[in-house]
Image (cartoon, rainbow, N blue to C red; front, top):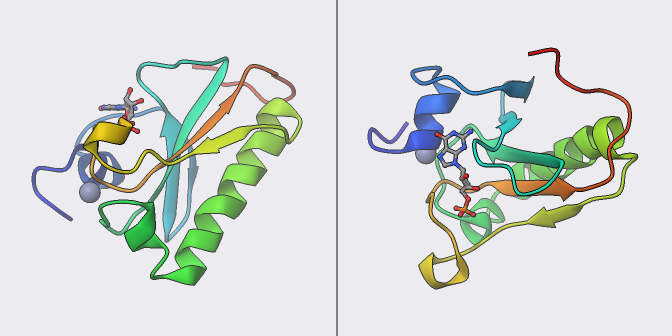
Length: 113
Ligand code: 5GP
Ligand code: ZN
């Protein structure tokens, strides 16, 4: 937990998010400012700055990608973009690694809330 990190606060349930998946290692929740019909962020619970740091833990990176695929299977028929902005000039604004699951194709499960 990094005190000033907004995604650590979401993981810690100090601030609310529309959570779609949670296990001991990974959380996924809706992006607050969606840019596609399906726009979900998949984050490791552990604070690491970006996907390159996340890749130092191969199992955790693999799990993040697998959860992204599972969410996309449920919500967009398994077709999606998985985007990791890395660095400020590349558009990263939250420095806790996160994959954007993006798709304009929707299917299956949607949220009740
Ligand atoms: P980045 O620009 O770092 O790749 O992506 C950060 C994403 O986090 C943005 O798409 C932004 O809309 C989203 N975001 C920022 N703050 C919050 C928040 O408090 N809650 C949620 N659910 N998403 C957030
Ligand atoms: Zn964090």
